[in-house]
Length: 282
View 1: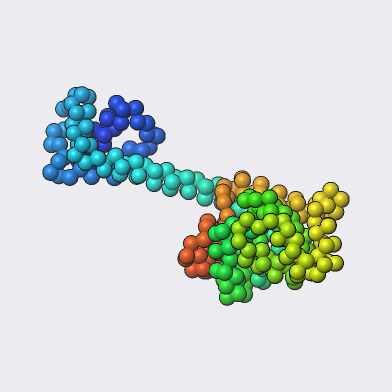
View 2: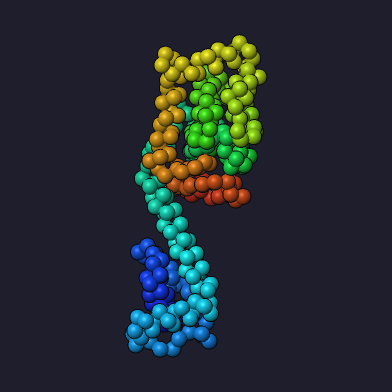
C-alpha cells in the first residue's frame, strides 16, 4: 500500500511540474519506490485533495530526494530492456537473411554441422577484443563453421578492407586467414595504405598489385561486383535485423546471439553451440 500511495503522490507531483513519463512507467515506479515506514503517510490517498497530495509529495521528496532518481533509473532500465527485447525479436524475424553463407569467407570446418555468423568491422575495438575467443572456440570445436560477414560501418577504410578482403578470400582462400588476422591485429583507424601493404606482404608485389587493381573494378569485374553485392547485402541485413553495432554473433539452430565482446564470450558461445547440437540431434 505504501508503494501504491507513494506512486499516486509522486505521479501527481510529476504532472504538476510538467515532467513527462511515457505510458507504462507506472509499473517501474510502483516497484522501485520504497517509502520508509517512519516517513510513509498513513492517510489513504483517496481522502486527500489534489493540493494536499502535492503538499505531501513535496514534503516526502524533500525528506528523500533519492525517490526521483530511483524512479528515473527504474524507468530507464525498463526502457532498455524493452528495446533489447524488441531488437532481439526483429533479429529473429530476419534470421534467414543473417544466415546466408554463400560466397562469404569461412573459418573452421566448411562442412561443419553448427554454423556461426560473425558480423564485424576491421576498425572495431570490440571485434578485435573478441577475435582471440572466436579463434580459440573454432579451434576447440571441429564441427563449427564460422561465416565471416564483414560489416563496414566505422570508416572508409573499413569498406575498403571489406571489398579487398572479399576478393582476396575468393582468389587466395588459403592465404586469407593470414590477411584477416593481420588487419584485426592493427589498431583501429587503419588507412587504405595499411591494407594495401598487408596484401603485398602476403602475396608479393605482382599478385598483390593484381588483386588490388581488380578489387575495385566493381563495374567491369564480375568477382569485384559480386563482392560489392555481398557487402551491401550484409549492411542491408544488419539494418533490417537491428544489428546496430559490431561485433554481432549469431548461432544458427539455437538462435543464440552475442552483442559486444563480454569476458564470458567463449563460455556463452559454448552454451549456444551445445543447444544447437542438441536441437539438431532431435
